[in-house]
Image (tube, rainbow, N blue to C red):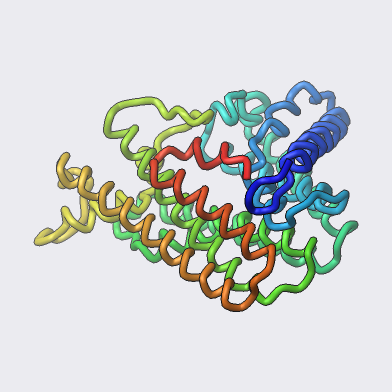
Length: 326
């Protein structure tokens, strides 16, 4: 059974099952060395959003694609383990985080071992893609360091925020696109598609941060299979907070959260969502460029994936995005 864009649904479901089984085995073997195999479900139980993009770009599964996606998911999970340590997160994927179960010291070491194994898998399967894996991992870690450095910094700018997004969120999505594109060979449309995915990553993060701020304003608990402190309480001033601080600082000598009233908060969320949609428009423009460069199956399949993700983002419900199968 195939979709209108030529992606074989049966192949996708087989790919998903094979990837899940491969990840389960990897984590069980890695953690069993230390008698910690019972914690592996918290590592392999993700929704494989990035691997779905890789499969969509490739159009069909292969043993190499499964191995590359296994490495991709493990590298992404390693960054989440480190992120949970920094944020003192309690839940991830509706399960206790490693830092909650084992403590931050042991969780840090396990996260490092997961990343090392991911790079080893990538290096065995493809030397050219190894550089892409290393670049993506460096970008994510650099962004996490920048985010930590700017904690509590009231004069944080929108551009500093975007720089963090390009690493923290976009880097792994770009890697997923490159993994899928490698399956179909050289294509002149790949470069603009990478730029499109970069803009999608920014839009995704802005929407996520708007949801986080709205939940904080409403005094609600976050409900996306994740439990951690709100970004604003951690001092991670995301785009809607930056926008609100800028608006409230008009005529003031310095920025202060105390100067932000309810209307300013609401306006900042509205403005930030408009910015997220602007980045989706930028992604659409890059896809149009890719279409001019190459009328290939790769470009067509990624365009269909983009439209589905964009539609879900416009609903302001991120769970609809990560649950989008194709």
